[in-house]
Structures are given as C-alpha cells and as structure tokens.
Length: 105
Image 1: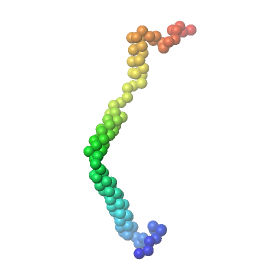
Image 2: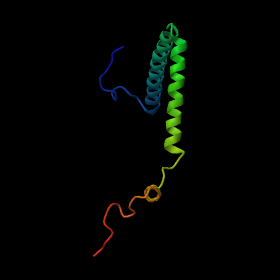
Image 3: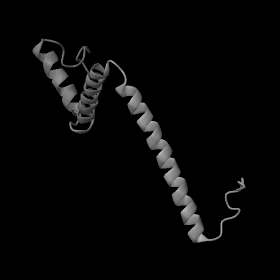
Image 4: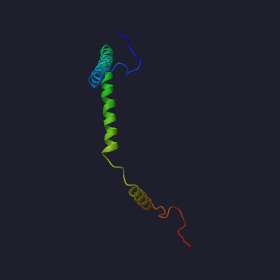
C-alpha cells in the first residue's frame, strides 16, 4: 500500500473520510493508552511506591486547599481593611490624619 503525503488525495467521499477520521482517533487513543500503561507499570515497579502515593496525596490536599481558598472565600473589602487599620492606629494613640499636623489652610 502506497502512502500519500496529501491527506485529501485518495479520499472517496464523506463516508470514507469519516472512517479514516475514526481510524485516526482510534490509533491516537491506543497510542496514548499504551504510553499511560507503560508509565503505570514503571511506577508499580518502584520500591518507594507507598511514599510516592503519600506525597501525591499531600500535594492533592494542598492543591485542594489552594483551590478552595481561591474560589470559595472572597477577599476582604479594601476599604474595610483600611478602616480597621485606622481604628487600630487610633487605639494605639497614633495620629488619625496619617502624620500630618492637622491644620488645614
């Protein structure tokens, strides 16, 4: 069977094109699954599999925490933070006008 470099050359109709697309997808899936199985087989042969799994679990927990912090809680309002800082400064006996002398001309 002769291979052609032009993918459009030799395509009979829409039915044949669909079959070729399906065959291409199947070949890609088989290649991907084969590579994944090879990786899993290599991981199972390691002597530190338990430690590797524990580390992966800790990483996933940390990622979950970060994701929840990012999407679940809203950051504090900027003006609210500034107001709390001013209240804390006043409670400590600091200036309420940010260090200016208070006389406005």
